[in-house]
Image (cartoon, rainbow, N blue to C red; front, side):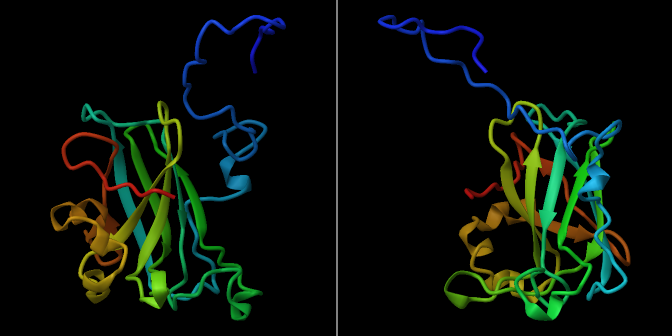
Length: 202
């Protein structure tokens, strides 16, 4: 909020400079203390009624200088293993799987989500999309939340996905998580620089 009032008949001295994202309503945005992220969402989306293969997605957030971003926060939204979006399908009206998670990066810039591998969902013009997570990235110096996606290595639907096809072939690896274990996928998010993650307009 401005701490000065422009008097009638006068002109402001200039354009108000841009600032980083915020201010925020604190609920569920602070790691400890009175309000906690876990009150609203956690990085563990799995519930006993969640349909789909249990997986973990892990990675780091890296800035344009190659430094780890230790104060970033990621949000994900997704369908369940059968491609059903919570809240959009009456069959899921009583399910506890919410398809939404939130994770802060740790002191080494790492994030992880435990969830279920999503199924395919309809996209533009009814074309089926490959399994993916929608991702929002918040961090210092970012004026507006960044949006990206996480796809999965080896999915047959990747080749025909209508959104992934918009990404130049040489840059698609920046949004495709690689399998790193029986139930582990890894993908780093690079905010700028070499191998910058592809971000989308929302």
